[in-house]
Image (cartoon, rainbow, N blue to C red; front, side, top):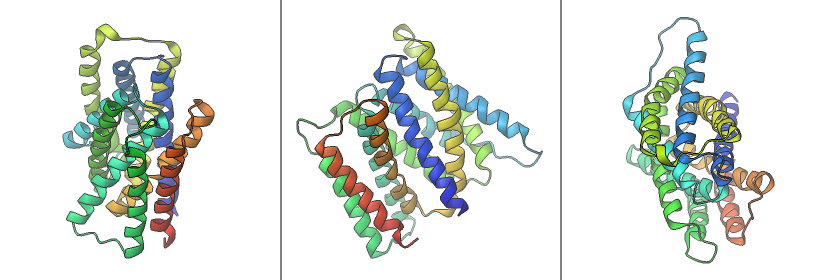
Length: 274
């Protein structure tokens, strides 16, 4: 039950990240570099404070490898959302995550059952439906940036399966990744755009959806096989698409509906026996 609660809360945080990011960038409330910097900085501050409030004990401090994956994900994720919608981005992102994590799990010896493979095939079919070129196909550059961001997030999630102190590890990773946020902000200083509403959305993304959400995800990961963790994350595009249509006014195309149904069906097959 603990793993179910942690996973569900983390997935809600992932969906919130897409909505908050698109809400800030899509409405031109904040530029990509400033959003990324504020997101990483507020996440680092929130997590460091929470880590220090705990009783003294041996604490993890993260790693540069995980921080690099987190930074790559954060930068590319933000750049992609300047070109594609929240629902589209979530579907591409977690499709790439799935391929990365399932592939790594297979290499490490994990062997899903037959019904799980059917679920994976169903989910991948949904992604292929969505990727076929056409009038409603997503922006190529935006989708490509999001796909690479998904690979980075897959690497970050795989590293989290070995975290003994989720809060300490996530805090350390955010502190290190903030350096990349500073570099990104400096490189794009001339094109910065800042509004109070944009800063509020970036802060919510960093402190709550990212900082707290990623800590909960790191706490759940040790109990999940890599391929199952990958499949479960495909719930996020479904949740994001529904919320984006209500909160951001994004249209839901037939292509997105078909892809979402296939992805959701695949997820249901893989978690049914659990």
